[in-house]
Length: 318
Figure 1: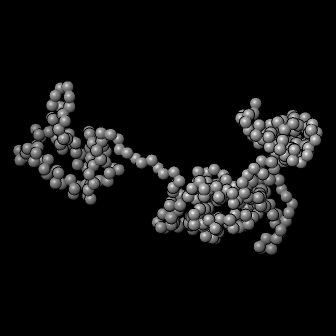
Figure 2: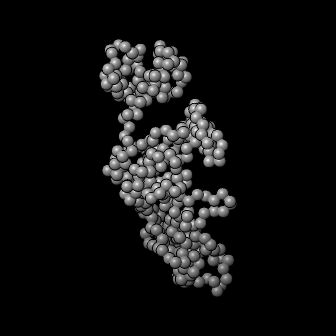
Figure 3: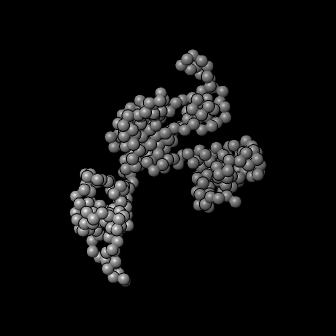
């Protein structure tokens, strides 16, 4: 069974019906109806079977299978918006930026040769990026990754920046102030409005802090604000202090030990004033030290005295 919705098959079938009426195809002159041709192509898109065997399963020859496949591909490609429509839709939707990237899709070898910059004869469709034969296609996506537009195919030997100059950049420059475009280091030198990160050095050095910050800011997702973090009810955050431990390193109040003084935010003898309900008085500070039986006589001072000493020494300890 084909794991696609029936609405998708109906939609592709309707497009094929409009195309056949537009070109004047006689009724019952095709080997497959619009519905069966839509199913035939969707199966190929979904599972990529051998086109000869797949055509034989539908009772058509190899040449007819190729023709029916490319016919549906052309019909679907006509529904895609052009570059100016995609950019206009992105501006209307309020997206803060776009993402430009290129991909080399594997293809059969095309025997078209050219002369390289070094004067050598090379195959135009051979891509050094993938070490194989393919076609280079540029794509514009929204910040959330949804693809809005793809360019015509260029030979795999054409680098990304050159393919972008041919198909994309001329339409991006007028919108550079309202719709900047993020790209990878392969687009260095693309011009105004195309933001390219600093590449990592290959000689063992590291990027400076300024360049790393620049790259981090370029990756910030501004189209979806992060939810505001709220503290859990019933827990008080510690007061800020210049010499005290940062807030993200402090544990919630309660049976908590703070190093290195190991202070507990309750007094063991006053934890429960009633056998049925805990005390409601503010927590006091007590040292996690040996019991008073092991203290010297001059150290057996009232607890309030140690409380005052610790409160005065806390800013300098932490």
